[in-house]
Image (cartoon, rainbow, N blue to C red):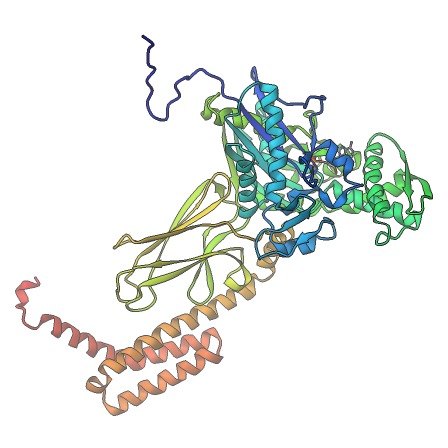
Length: 624
Ligand code: AMP
């Protein structure tokens, strides 16, 4: 008789079995898959020995989808069906696509307000579906190389990806048939690769310039614990921009009008990238442009001209570096090491600029293209249960504060920016009106004091609050940001326990430019904001006082007030109403004080009446 193996729920029946887990770097230009084998993390090649998979997908009518090198090769001939740099569209809305339109020359279907869809020979495809094709190819590659089914994957995302971009990446993973163990910030993954390999300690800067994004992160590594002190970046800056700038120069030299000769422009773009790579090794590169009429322009791109074209683009990495240092509260001299990540950091000019900013020669001993995938593989190995999880703790931060709208259109921050995640924070709020049974919760993101200056993330309602007098309800609002940076908000009325919640998946992404602008504005408008906040607070208080006095006068004015008293209160009410509409915070405060004074005696009388009503029919000793 065969023995039955019995295990507790949640426990593995084969505890010593090595689970196949991979780390995936889903890049704008190239993607990679890595795994840990025999304690060593490395990227996995395809059948032809290539590690980098170009993040390019080609759709054909009635035929299989092509991913990678073969798709890239067809890009010039079949541009509209060959999708590259799709990462830039992840989690973005139809409107964002319009601004990216110049960079991503595909045909987009008129959107229905949500996800953009690209028109291809195989029909409409969403960015999530395109990314899923890339992930599926990497999954197949890994399963072929490892000889089994994957138990899970860690997928990396730029540190600045917002909720919707992270969610879109997760969705793509699921669509590809992967169990997404976790999303991991790319710079954190790079730190994992270096930290575990070298057992390093100190404060590090991770400078990541890829094909389409730039990320700078300040991390503190201490005995295997990685804490992200600050992040900054630009999700629309990278080697692609250099390719466009070089191609623009080439086409200008050749006298080609991009609008009329798209084919020449596309070929120039490819050649520009090749020239850029050559210039990482040599002092000059041969370039050519094939015009529509078949004639050819041939030229040379030398060091000086190259510098003039690419330096302004490289220079754009400097401001985010300085901001990250400032946010982390440190100076460049505190940085122990600079880690280079991303294909574009192979460029000597980029390395030199990073060195100038931080005053240190950057580390580049792990291949800058593979370091993120390697770190993700190490993390996947731990999450799959192949290694003790207490060996490593990873902390990331949220880039912008999260809060809710309170009365008067003001923002109450619940989680402040640069808080490490995962994080959960609760704050209590109260009801504003007597008998209020519902509360609208508006979740916002940003640094400013007024809701109108922040970004709206979600709205939901808490219903079924038991009717109480204003200020008596206790509504606890809890914000929870999980390890992937996704936000869940719940609201619960404390006496009745009624609850309502929302998971935030905003349909529109937030570019780094917007994040930068929001941060800059929060500093520039700090003074103005505090004046505006004071005014809104006084207006809200005036509304509350006006409503309370009007109710009281309607209820008891006839019985408890003499005619002159009533007149005085009416005058004070009218004055406050007019101040509420036209005056500044100090004047409204004064109006509230005058009304308070005019109603003090009336309030005392009402209280007495209330007490005698409550006492009538009772003996005094019942209350003692
Ligand atoms: P990634 O997004 O990290 O895959 O980076 C891809 C970018 O790195 C592309 O813009 C490439 O053109 C660029 N790149 C790769 N190798 C080199 C090189 N040797 N010299 C200059 N740029 C490179």
